[in-house]
Image (cartoon, rainbow, N blue to C red; front, side, top):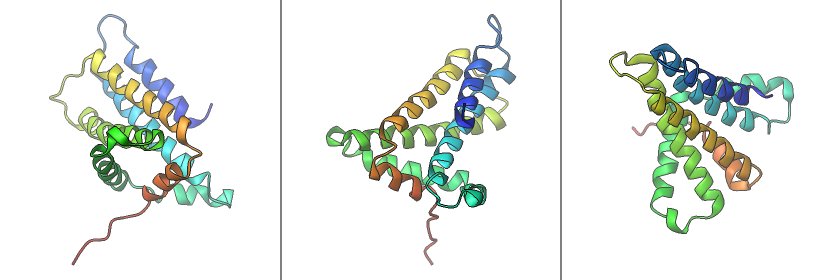
Length: 161
C-alpha cells in the first residue's frame, strides 16, 4: 500500500482507537495524520510525472505546506462561484482544494491549539473528508486539468513590489 493510503488508514485507526473515552492525543494525531495523507498524495502524484525517478525525492521536497494551501484556497474560491455549472473534473478539483485548505487549518488546530477539545465525531469527520478527497482524486487523476492543478501546487506566488 502506498504511503498516503497508509497514513489515511492510520488516521482512521487513531480516531477509533479508544472505544469508550478517546484520548485527545489520538484524536489530534488522527486529524494531523489525515492532513498529511492528503499532502503526500498530491505530492506523490505530482512527482510521479517527473521523468527521472532518482530526482523525484528532491522535487518532492520543493512543495511547501503554506504555498499549497494558498493555491488550494485560491482554486477553491475561483471554482466556488461557478460550481453549479462546473464539470465533473472541476468539481473534483474543488473538493480536493477545499479539503486541503480546511484540513491544513484543522491540522494546525490539532497540533498547536491545546485549548480546543476534539470529539471523536469531529476527528472522524475530518478523516472522512480526506477519504472523500482521495476518491475524487482517483476519479479525475488522468484528466489534463487535474494534472495542471498538481503543477500549480508547486508554483509560488510572486510578491508584488
